[in-house]
Image (tube, rainbow, N blue to C red; front, side):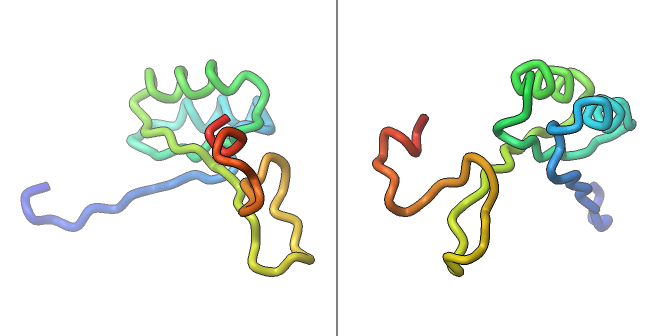
Length: 87
């Protein structure tokens, strides 16, 4: 970067709305796309994003401190066994 500041752009919650996900993949980058782990066609989306030159992150919901909050589908919880978490 030659000592110049760098900005990272992360687009979160990508993948559940496939048409919008594909539009984000087509945006010139580099971008970081945080893909929802339960998105339909996730392997295809992540492959397309990488081929387009984007970084890919897994958006993995985790158990909130407040038990009344809903973390969303597929959340990791502290009472899960290690095999379930790895899966």
